[in-house]
Image (cartoon, rainbow, N blue to C red; front, side):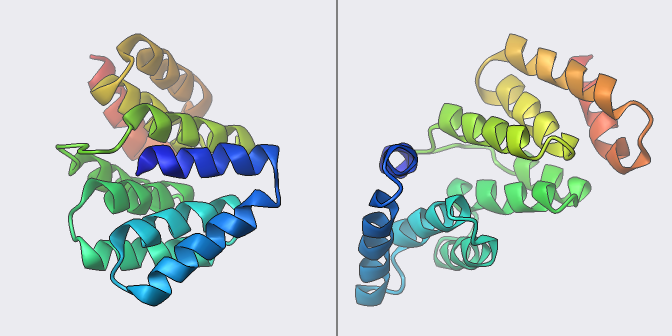
Length: 171
């Protein structure tokens, strides 16, 4: 499933009109089965990429209600919390993910890194990319990202909970 999502994302970036087809496909699936977990997950990402954050949140919540505790909507929920600067809540959600299942964690991390490039003023995104790298993917890259986070966050109190976690993670 995640590969389909990413192919939508990348094909949409190459051909902006393609997104409409992807949206219609997922929307049609939801109309046929409003409990289609995969379709709601797909719509969450598609709507986010289109800039419709409210609909992305709606589809994430819907996917969560269909499969509570599943890692995919938990990743989305945690991302929204970090994006909204609710750092402690977001970190708690990420820490609850013990099994990444069919999630391609590298794709998740790359998505967060790209979002950080768009929203450089939210260092929480940089922190999460680094933290996820250390937990699941590239520890050296993650350590570099967490050190950069600490350097840029310095003594900003809004990042206190993340700074403590970064220091603990780095040892």
